[in-house]
Image (tube, rainbow, N blue to C red):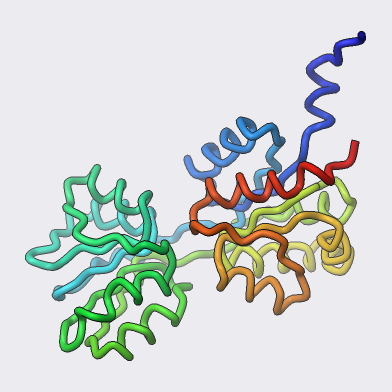
Length: 256
């Protein structure tokens, strides 16, 4: 029996495009996909531009990302007597590592999950939502419908990094087996980058033959609004769950 060399083994692995900010999250994504037996095609579709703002006072302060938690910690923000709410375990872990107590974590790590966790207790309360400039209206509208006095603080703006989009060309050429969209904005930035490179239609056609993963329902809805069929939406809105489910879905149909 001939044992394939390392180069041959790696060439036969799934290739998965992943769109994370160009920090430890992208490095962690590459490492995770490698552990799952896939080769990552990292393409940082998001760049963080801090605004310098910090949350105002309130009865509740809601954080919707690890990035937001890091920014308020760096700014030395204090919650006072507010109930601190985190959208998911990574955000909660970042807050706790910075010395904050996290009082509430939803069962579902999404904007809808936050609304479900808070709607029975925020009537008449001041709720501060601290997040990026591309947050879902689901959270603000849901909390207001529950009777809360909602204020949003934009902690950072999200932009597409200059030069991002190499993955769009690889997708268009059929060189990518799967993609992991981690937000609606990554879908939009991917398509913008593809258009700038003149491969938008080719990329859309190729995605029909690839396995497309979306981290949650809002991301799925955005992708499908652009004509992208989504194959995988994990039960938990975490990158680990998304990557695992996407690789598992792609593996049986992997070419070669």
